[in-house]
Length: 252
Image 1: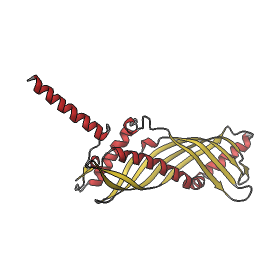
Image 2: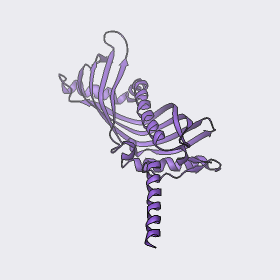
Image 3: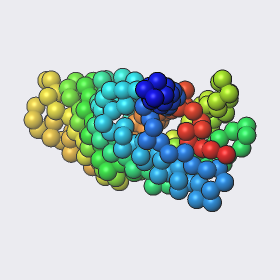
Image 4: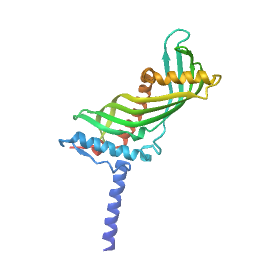
């Protein structure tokens, strides 16, 4: 009798170990049926569950901590000629991204390809960076170096993902083929401080201009920023797809 119990225990332990290895500790993911008429709502719910767990970190995917999101460098250029404004931002850290909520999901599934379009909202992102600039903004001399800060409220983004299924030991996984994204920001507050060789009057004038024209400045930063964000998101999606089988998301 004891031998039978030990055998049952060993079998259950083996099954648990296999499940853990298969999902890498992501057993909270609930797959959605491909034939469910509410498939897109189900996938959105699953994605939001993943995001909620992601806020506390997912060491099983190589993310013991989620924030800050770090970007190495961004550039901005306004105007031409010798007095055109140029700025370089380094070691950008952003906090608040993990509070995102997916509020829309569209999908097209076939045996050869998976397409997803996600819409999500982030209440507020706080960013900080070191910056160096040269040139003139309107009539304000903006050459110098110091600290940049920014608060971005009401961030809305859309992400398009295209992936292809493939087999590994009879299990289906996804391989990322394309990722595109775009975003808008409702309200922006930003400025510079601790600027060397700049008096308080010029610094106040510079920050007034920056905040008055924050949406235009974001527009100039957007191409470089979007390219960096696509790199960060692509890396995360590739890692997720490589470790979590397609069957954990969608079942036949």
